[in-house]
Length: 191
Ligand code: FAD
Image (cartoon, rainbow, N blue to C red; front, side, top):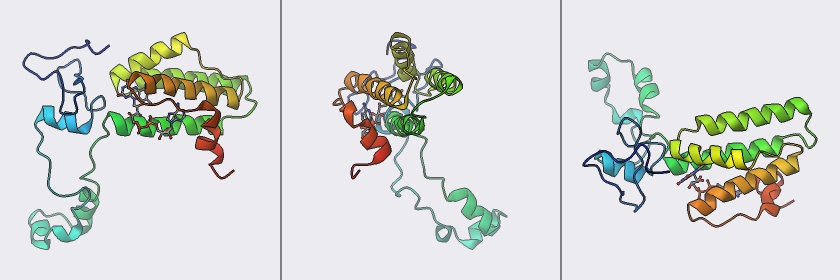
């Protein structure tokens, strides 16, 4: 449901990618819900010419460091990661699916009652807390209509694959063959 919270007055409906811009309740563009390109477009953030991670120790003169009264080691520590942007909807999604499918790959083949309960709670909380709010909303609905199947690793892995496919279909990506979920996420293709 992209109509909630809605498009603030005077703000663009669509981004440079052609996707609808998603806004938070406070009217600001949602960082975890949009692509970085669209987020930057809508927030008018100038793209820095330097590539990610290019601010090295040597780029900061010792004069600058001493003028700022920060030891060089400290400068290196504070600037080493500074060029990485918070994840956009795609980075967050890819990382999250990796975690979820890898959890399925490590889930016991015959989980006991506690292990099933733990995973059920995790999936529910994941859906509740997922930072892209409109993704979370649809994922919660999916879970309500398709309860996680937790009786075995195979069943859970397939349930997750189907859940992922529902998102793939929603956003126009091809479906993944769920017969291959274990090769992709557990055994590797050479086994
Ligand atoms: P991803 O879809 O992230 O997949 C990563 C890898 O998983 C693929 O390369 C492939 O090897 C494998 N894979 C693909 N499909 C399956 C499958 N069915 N089973 C097992 N493995 C598979 N984005 C939106 O734009 N709108 C949304 O509403 C939205 N909802 C999301 C909800 C959740 C819970 C999550 C975790 C993400 C959501 N995303 C959403 C992000 C979206 O699903 C993708 O992660 C993102 O578009 C990046 O896609 P990708 O092509 O890198 O591959």
